[in-house]
Length: 281
Image (cartoon, rainbow, N blue to C red):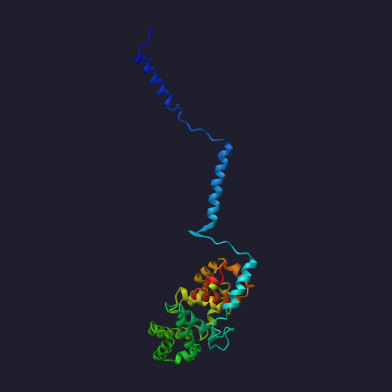
């Protein structure tokens, strides 16, 4: 029977629509070759491992410097900005842990940890030492008004009343608890750094930052504290390429507590005076 023109057109249209339809599958996903799947899995795992090695606590890690580079940079820092802590002040024996030297380090930690410019804090430390207050008996004989005047002379006007009181309390604490010599505190703590820090923290007006400053500067005299670097200095050390491994930095200065203290002084100066660019690679 002859097909009509309409029937032919309909048949042609049906065939075309069938061609356009996607092929029917069984609903299962095609399996990738085993070797390709294994390769992708290893690649993903390696990428995650690499990323994890570069990040710690949400921060990108800086590469660990080699020992020669570290030694060269620590030497340069000490030579340019390092000094024995408080050696520029009127202290008779800054390299020995005498009772007056240790007390002077407490003054330094107390005064420089306050929210005041480092220039004024350093000037005030010098004024307090020049007044003879590192001798605990001289401090004991001073009046609150006299201590206030000394602090004012150093420019410590914002905290002078509170600090004058704190100095009086400190004197009483040193005399009554440690027989006038803070070296007895170290002995009582049996040279254990954490116990020393805990006892020093008892001082009124000396918080966590102050305790860290004390450990920074005193490690050259109380060598049991070494190696130590306060968090702010350690952050600067990492910025200028020293890394953040305190033990490795200590190795770079020959495991010498006095040099470690001098390095901390240098890094503090770099941080406060914004001289990081001088030591960046």
